[in-house]
Image 1 (cartoon, rainbow, N blue to C red):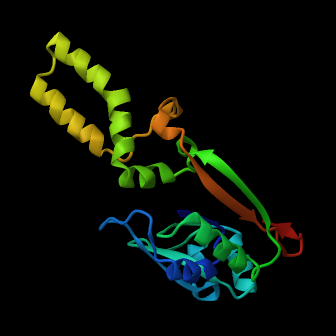
Image 2 (cartoon, rainbow, N blue to C red; image 1 turned 135 degrees about the horizontal axis):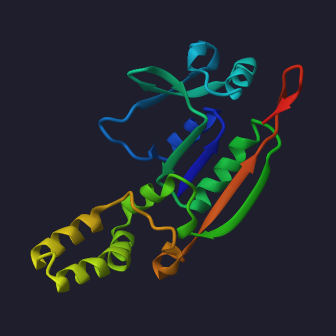
Amino acid sequence: MKLILKGIMAGFIALAGSLHAQKVVQHDNEPGWRAQAAADVPRAADNSDAAGLAISLKDQIIVWTDPSGPKIASEVNLVVDAPYAKVQPAVQQTLTSFGQFEAHEENIPIAYEPEGWDEVLLSRRADLRDALATKFVQPSLDQALREGTLTAAEVSQRMVTARADTSSVPQNRITLDAFRTTYASYAASLKQSYGLLRKSQ
């Protein structure tokens, strides 16, 4: 299951930790993250109005670290190693401590993953990578082989590369049966007002 956390509330990190969460895509050259009090983060790291609200509420927030300094996260994506039926009630229970949320559940084809989740899905599903390579890469390679611009060995090697690719997801992937499979989706939103102008988010 995937857990998408809009906003910068870090209370969900503890929840996900209890369900064996892991960072979505971990590479050696990527920055790491930590949870800390919003008031302790240098204001120079503030990249949204939400940080000011978090400070006033004495919230914990998620901060990314990289060579240029700390960056406040506006969104947190976690992969939770647990079935949807187990995670969803836990998420609902955790949300109650933050206020009254408006929630929405539906079943969505995996072709319509939220932005950034295509790569996560492909990194864990060799069958989907194979389906994409067969449909969108192999025809042009076969033509190149027939025309003599590529050798059979070159075609084979390029197909190996295509089947390992986790970044290329064609817009028309919904045409493949493998990408029509649906998954359960749960989304919840909370409006909060703050400041003299009663801005909300």
